[in-house]
Length: 189
Image (cartoon, rainbow, N blue to C red; front, side):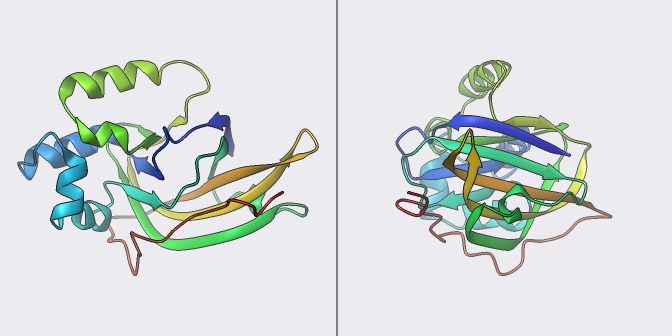
């Protein structure tokens, strides 16, 4: 099964984040982190801890482009591995925990003022069709991140694909480079 979203922007910040954002809110409360999660994640080890515990997957070095976002589930063949696609980045070792039956791709800006109000506002905006959010069964998932270009309407479009397969239980992210740059600029022209 595959879910696709087009024209997804990164809000002029070179970062995307993937995860159950309500789980991130609980992580913030449990670890008594400030509302400025961006500062917390960059000035102490809370960001690395959130990644290791499967709360969030960070994607750094994201160019300011409109992206095609794909979620590929149930061991389906990734679109970025299809003939004609151009794969540039392939990273595995990520895990993701889902406790609120949804996973979304969001931008760094939400972390800068991560309050119940801004979270509620974001959740309301994501109810509009076309936003990169999918429903999933609760549990743990192995996640592979692919980035490159896929052909849509005869043109190459920059794309991120999240290959998610449910796993039997809890896990920790392994050998994940949280600063790895997923730049695609110039790759698909």
